Length: 204
Image (cartoon, rainbow, N blue to C red; front, side, top):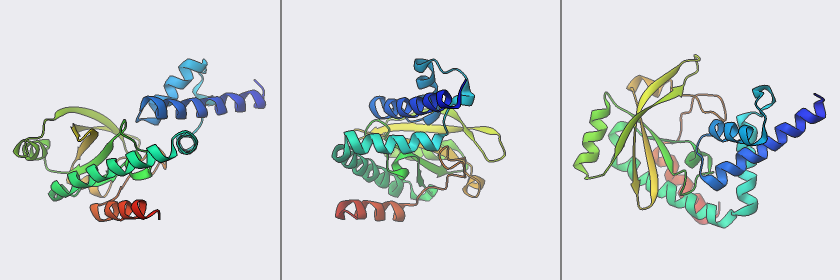
């Protein structure tokens, strides 16, 4: 296959994966990329683009097709995430994922790292606050190449899906890998999220 053909396939996958994330609310870049590859008949993963390229294309797609609507939804997502972070402050919450990077909307919602001795500590907090929730385990990649399972608690608040990933306290110094930067995803604390909201409100 010629280099020109390889590049054409890669660009097609970049665009299609970004479109799927935007239009179908797919949170995970790799999931969107796999789906795009199936649709485009590009089974050879050596032809696939980097996750960072898909993220850049997603931002461009949002800027072109839904600039004001996405900005409003991002603000709402961050507001609800901040409220949850303040309520769960004892678990040292950190905002990560699309809500941190600025590509979130009402489909993706927000993901928050929480650091606790056990998932039950977080669940009991939600029960005390009468928050309906559901729990499952999910694998997350780490810098040593391993994938580790962590409890994920999810619920809706005012139309915004929130996802709490419950990590052991030691993971504060070694959190899971950010798929875009390929570095540990340290996220933002409540004060930093508050600053982002202020900047967004003032057009900064």
